[in-house]
Length: 228
Image (tube, rainbow, N blue to C red; front, side, top):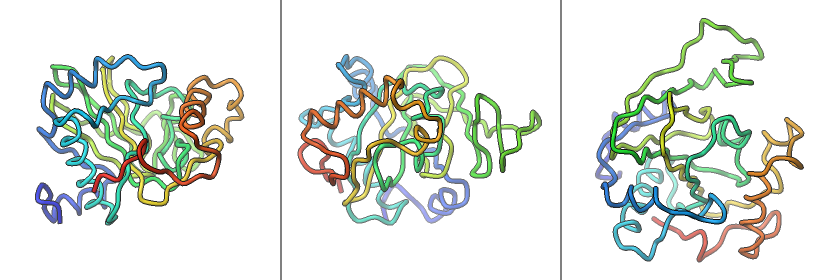
């Protein structure tokens, strides 16, 4: 068991689908992540920097413990994910181009607390409205969490992507188990039939292709290092 986790942490993650842990990232690491200006929004971590690498491995070890996986890779990192994009408005099991996925992490990068809305397993967001079993209702309410600088939210593959209440600089980390593969298009994109016009999907495909991947390939070093 990870020394940062108790048995109650495991029960919370299993029951609710998410776990909010405090003070896992330093202000210096958050500043480094928030200042990255990449051609694609999928390359925000520099493992050559000692503190960044140590932080990422700490987060990966928590994911490994929560998901009962021995080996965890970094799938990709994304700065300021747009919750309105099909990639990020669905559960990770549907919104990602990687399969299988272990869990996601959402890390606020600012210096002030932020309000985060979470959606239980039986609720999803469809065109901005909460939906359960194909039925929408204005009476359903998200779970509200206050996340402070240094906090990290871990969430499983069936939880709809968390949504900040207002503008917030944040970093999303996708962690995958050993053997995860690169898919042509995520299920959420196929369902919406927008894959040809979605710029983020195109950027993601380009990012993987430039690193030598073809559809169906298993993720490998050095771009997707094993962290546990």
